[in-house]
Length: 121
Image (cartoon, rainbow, N blue to C red; front, top):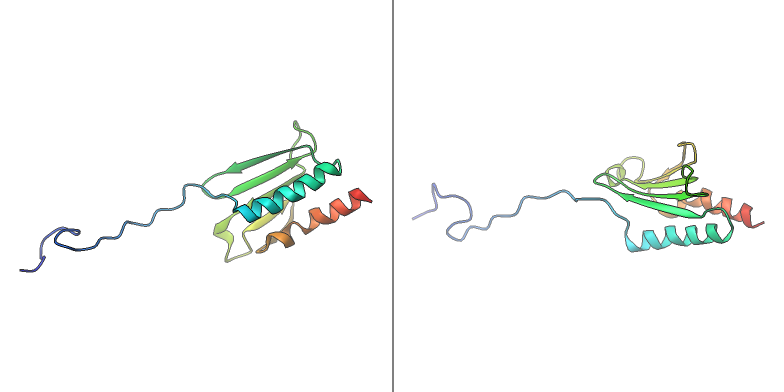
């Protein structure tokens, strides 16, 4: 007798779980190490004093502040939904302008690296 009319999962049928979307986007360990390395060097140069991170369903954000009460001097966003388009990484300036977009974190952080070199000199 065949499984006609029976619900899936009975009589030895394998039923896959439906795919679930991620609860939130986060930074991978290597990404976070790179970001915090830059943050530490900017703190040592006297450029930044505080940071904040935000994680939600669409994006993970790292914001660096010169002073706590101000708007962020730099904000880095990771949006995996843009991975196949303009790149999932975006670096925003203090006034919300897009400084750099791309697929590679190192290239997106390059303007901040150059700023660090100017601050040290």
